[in-house]
Image (cartoon, rainbow, N blue to C red; front, side):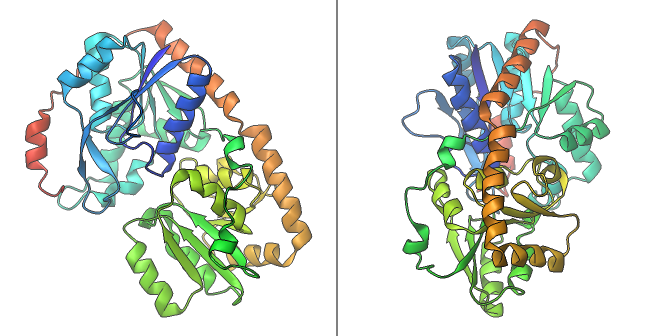
Length: 394
């Protein structure tokens, strides 16, 4: 099959959506498919990535809102004889995928990666939409495509509650276990962490990730425990200031290239995760695959992804004391920690192998091609005027 993936974020950007697109592309290509990516970012030497212009969000400088002009995209799709469209965001590139679906009668699959209702605060006032508006928009977009993919059963239920009527398939992003099997660098030695108990968080430093919760956890840890915060985001400056004021033992590394994350996973004793909004939470599975146990809050996608006791200890509610006690229990029991390391790796190999997930995706594509064109009528967006009007973008 000749597949075109539309996404507002792609490698070298480090986030769950970029990782998902990259890993699925890698495994689809292994199985003989031609996969092209339309995105505002991508490796400079990748001829199968059509890089489009983008506007930078004022609060998220590492992310761009893609601007894809129709004529260039139309030629790209036509010349490569694309057979299936796969959108990963319902925004400008999602609309362009719908437009290509309409113009060329190409089947279209959409993955609903992000609980958009939890990200409304990134749209500046007075443009901030209500929760109901976001739910209605999500349902409208999903009902325009052949099939929808949800990362977990929890997200499928959420979409059904919005009013999505199209087929919804649950296909999580699998883990490329080979990538996380062996580190290349000794982070403990590089950062002089000898003798320390190391906790690790990997992800964006943003409000919806509930990172402040982890600072509260650190207040309850002994002096020999250190937290590595790997990532960047709009909350970083505030979190660093708070950590200094509270004299917390935290190292903020900033953004780390994706290929180097394995080194940090292997350097940690425990991965800690307090996000309440995840659709899946790939980082927790990457940590388990690296042999690092996880302590997390069992909300949204996380409770569908992790099994308590299989490399992870889960807290059912947002309780700092309960979370802290689980962390302390693991740090104080080396035999339990070792058992959890092995159990976590086994769990990922058994349930989250990428080969299984890509087979499921192939079947969804085949069903969409068999079904054929879905009739849609897409509003015309003048992208040049749109760019001029969006004054709050840089």
